[in-house]
Length: 143
Image (cartoon, rainbow, N blue to C red; front, side):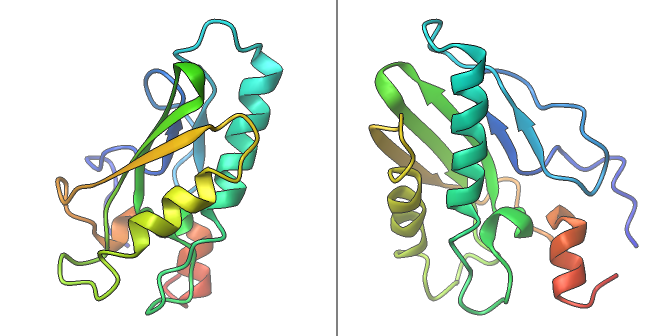
């Protein structure tokens, strides 16, 4: 297995600041918000619900959801329920490159408290299999 010590944090639900210190191979979720009026319990609920919504979106060529694949780089909840999502694809030439950000937007907008989701596609840094969670590796027989 590759050495992940120099890899950036993966699949952080960043509702305001830096990545959490979850153990390697586990999904991480930061529970801060740029909206000071949201109570901590509401931030926790939104975090949980956003992760669940993202796990409903699958790369059609890989039998794993985009969250566990490590395609979600960052999610920020801003004031008035605006969610900013930064994501990537497994390859720039992905046949669903135009569709997958719409799927992510639609999934995030199902979460109570998210009024609008804006999804940005990036290839910096490029996705590698090192970004996958242990769950995705198990699903793909890569452990």
